[in-house]
Each structure stands twice: as structure tokens, then as C-alpha cells.
Image 1 (cartoon, rainbow, N blue to C red):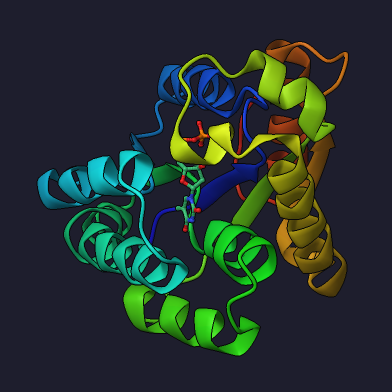
Image 2: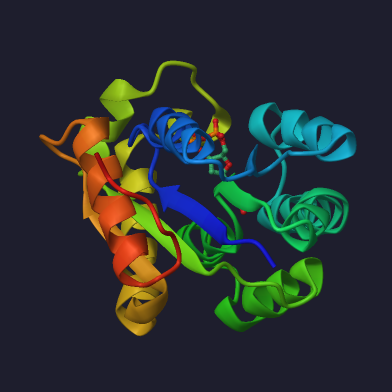
Length: 206
Ligand code: TYD
């Protein structure tokens, strides 16, 4: 099985730039990399993404659509890539549903966890990289406004508290990075150093 890494955080933490650069670095060192995102990653899940980001809906509909997109994504893209030994880098995954739908939207925590397990067939990431940035700074950096960004910094503050709750409960499965005042290159060096130490990668980090 390949290595499965997810990236989480509030809006505008620079996740996608960091992930693209990390993918380039791993590819340069001969790792086969699949770069993907949630909601999305397959043709159908990308259609569900458009509904999620721009249509208004109630919190349960929102949760079910995220889980529906996730089920497709895991089955059609993530699992096959991992079985081929690829390194999968995924922009958001089950922890987003906990931080956004359970914590910020106040849906029952246990139900969201149970749906996450069903949608992923119990697949969990080897590591979650949590990018930590004060939500007010993040929102200023975000360029295209989705439904979630329009909800403003109060909502993002709640999402941030949600991530901190998950992190405190299960520290071992996270690498939490404070992104303020750090360049993507510095962050990549930290990530690669960490994965080398844990013997999950073998890269000469020069
Ligand atoms: P996106 O534009 O990809 O945001 P970002 O660049 O910050 O990752 O939009 C994805 C949005 O969907 C984002 O606001 C977080 C939200 N989301 C959930 O609420 N629950 C989920 O399970 C997932 C995967 C995403």
C-alpha cells in the first residue's frame, strides 16, 4: 500500500500551493504521486462539489453530499492509487466533515464519525497535516469566495476550534504546522524531515 496523507485547515492557509510543491518534490525523488481533493477527485464527485460550494442547503444535506462525494472518491480513486503503491496527497478529507459539519454546524459528532467510516470503508490516512493560521489572516488570503468563505471569520473561528478539538483528542495522527511567517519551502522541509524520521519516506532532503 502507498502512503496516504491528507491536508486540513481553515480557508486560505496555502494548502494547495504547498501540496503542489510537495508533489513536485516527491516526484523528483521517484515517488509516484496522486494529487487529489475533496469534495471532488472523480467526475461525479466534482459535480457534487459544484452543488456544495455554490447552492444553499440544510446542514444534513450538506453532510450527506460530502459523504456521497467521498464514497465515490475513495472507491474510484484513492484506494486504487494506494493499491498501486502510489503516494496519495489529498486536499481535505474526513477531518473536514468533523470540523465543519460536526463542530461548526453542530451536527452530532458520533453520526459524522460513523458516516465518515461508511464512506471511506474505514480507510484512514497515515498522516494528516494540519495547517494552522489565525482564521482572520486566512480569509484575507482566499481569492475565490465559496459559500463557506462568505460566512466570514466567525464561522472560520468555529471551524478552527473544531480542528483544535480533533487535534487534542488524537495528536498522534497529526503533524500540526504553524504557517504564519513560514515559506512553503520551509514547510516542505519540515514535512519531509518528519516523514523521513518516521521512516515513511526515504528522501535526501537537499
Ligand atoms: P475549497 O474551495 O476547496 O476550500 P479550500 O481551498 O479552503 O480547501 O472548498 C472546499 C470547502 O468545503 C471548504 O470550505 C471546506 C468545505 N468542506 C466541508 O465543509 N466538509 C467536508 O467534508 C469537506 C471535504 C470540505
